[in-house]
Amino acid sequence: MNQTPAQLRQHFRQQRRQLSADEQTIASVSLLKQIQTHQLIDNDAMVALYLANDGEIDPINVIHYCWQHNIRVCLPVLHPVCQGHLSFQSYTPDTSMANNRFGIAEPTWDCRDVVPLSDIDYIFTPLVAFDKSGNRLGMGGGFYDRTLAPLKSRQFKTKLYGLAHECQQSEQLATQPWDVPLHAIITPSQLIRA
Ligand SMILES: Nc1nc2c(c(=O)[nH]1)N(C=O)[C@@H](CNc1ccc(C(=O)N[C@@H](CCC(=O)O)C(=O)O)cc1)CN2
Ligand SMILES: Nc1ncnc2c1ncn2[C@@H]1O[C@H](COP(=O)(O)OP(=O)(O)OP(=O)(O)O)[C@@H](O)[C@H]1O
Image 1 (tube, rainbow, N blue to C red):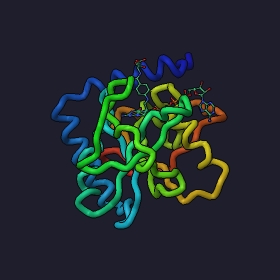
Image 2 (cartoon, protein in one colour):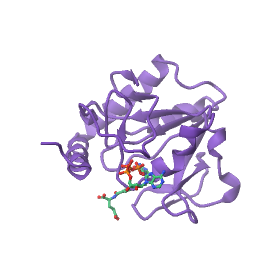
Image 3 (tube, protein in one colour):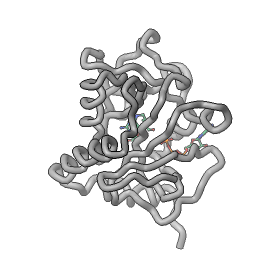
Image 4 (spheres, protein in one colour):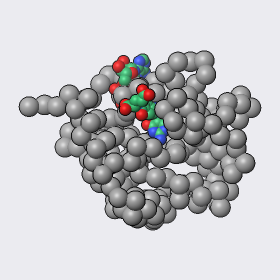
């Protein structure tokens, strides 16, 4: 029987939460190695990442790598006005942070630090499940889908990469009209081009 999105979320969130702290650390180091091996980030790029939550693969080593190589980093912030949307805000070691309503740390709102979507070269998204065609199942809030909708219709340079543990691969996910497909998925052991 086909599983509902809610059942799939429950299954794949449980899978990623079951990884031990050691497994998470190894995965996070291997993730950076994959990004380096495939030379996915140019030196003068603007890159959107995220702070790991709920067993997500942790991009913290990627963030530190970017900072060390003068690659600019931004993070998603729950938009204070446009409900259900994200804003991307620049992130440096000095950025003032606060927890959002999901308990995830994000830069405190400052309109001067907002990075427009059109200025972002690569967006690395968290995900609950993915398939080899670049379909992505998120936490169910529709935040990324709403925010990234312009990438579907207009000529944006922005590339969309999903970051995931191997155990988050699904055989085939049902697609929704509002889904924004990923260009590729990066796991600790491979780059899967969609
Ligand atoms: N690390 C990370 N940051 C992110 C996201 C994400 O998926 N991961 N988001 C991607 O959209 C946005 C936040 N969206 C989220 C949506 C739901 C939940 C969540 O934990 N939901 C709980 C219910 C919590 C509650 O209602 O208070 C749950 O479903 O169990 C977390 C983040 C922006 N930042
Ligand atoms: N571009 C959009 N415009 C309006 N509503 C949207 C859009 N994208 C998603 N939604 C709404 O958001 C809800 C959740 O979508 P979905 O289940 O695809 O989220 P998700 O991809 O799991 O979450 P996220 O994007 O935050 O990671 C859907 O019910 C849908 O109606």
